[in-house]
Amino acid sequence: MGRTIIFVGTPGAGKSTIIAGINHKFKLVNIGSEMLEIEKKDYGVKDRDDLRKLSAEITKKVRNQVFDKIRKEKQDIIIDTHASIRSGPRFVPGFTIEELQSLNELMTIVYIDAESKDILERRKEDFKRRRDVEDSMDLEEQREVNISMITTYAAIMGIPLYMIKNQQGKLERAIKQANDAVKEMFG
Image 1 (tube, helix red, strand yellow):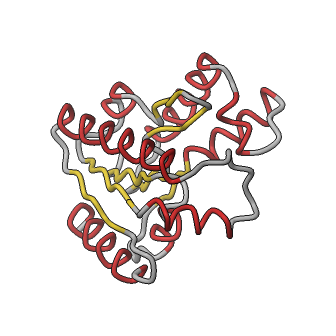
Image 2 (cartoon, rainbow, N blue to C red):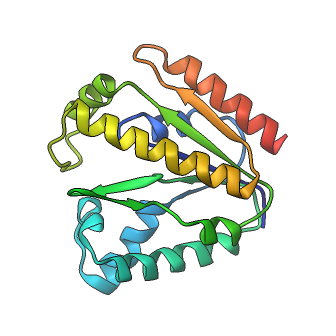
């Protein structure tokens, strides 16, 4: 298996946009898209917004299938996923310590962060998704949960953690920081 960088962030922080600006050859694996493909076929799910509504048992089973597929990759991988998924009042981890440990020791986590007000504005412009109605307090709570999770993962795994702030109007700066992190990891 190649080296692995896991990009995480609160939905709307700009993670996928920043990944698109990375200028290194890698295999991109979007956990949500991979899960959707399996769940459409096996569980009749219609779109990504229904993923978070499945039972924990089904979610874990499907996520295991996705991580099995990732472990078979030979080239450098960037994983696009979430540290947590909010489902009503609960937060579900986007991945587990065991899943991380099953991947590779040559790994790092990059957290893309943005101010809650910026995330809310970006979400208003995204007509492709059906998101739960949230306010800035909900987003602050999710950002805090995400940062707690990824710092815990990095500490337990002994792997580097990059924090990149995707400020409104400063996308190029965030992309440069992401490219620097990728260059440091992948060479």
